[in-house]
Image (cartoon, rainbow, N blue to C red; front, side):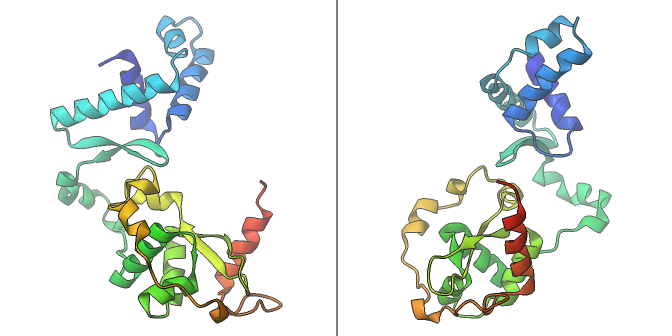
Length: 225
């Protein structure tokens, strides 16, 4: 194992979140301040993102070859060490209170529609599913797997929805292009909501728009660019 890979392994072990290549480079350079006389520290401070990615791949391959109880996974947020699926039955006992709540089949179906066809409106989702999705959309918003991305430029200006970075991290994806059969499913023609089906904007909030959704839109407007 190279010195760079060893240092990155230590960073991944100590970090409670995924680390991107650019973050790792920042930490490599920042170490010079605390150990200016250390030759290894000075040498690693010169490494660039490409070398970090190569070292991460070296670690990943080594873990796979050794059949360790963990492996290195890359997602949209960066790299992180996760336990092997084969060890779930044992590891789960360490966190009995953190059992993830499962999404219902209807929620998963709705999430799939958003993931493959985003951005789209609630009315468009209902046109595909054929049922009201108000409750399901609220659940997905609360779980943090979808978000409001803006408003459609149609009468009534309904909200548009898309997936979040947490969605990518949760499903182990780096980009949406890694979704199964992504290119094929994006080309499939789906029903869309009739233009006159959208309601006009009311003085305080859009017809059919929940209070939580209105708060999310307002907070997004207040965020700095």
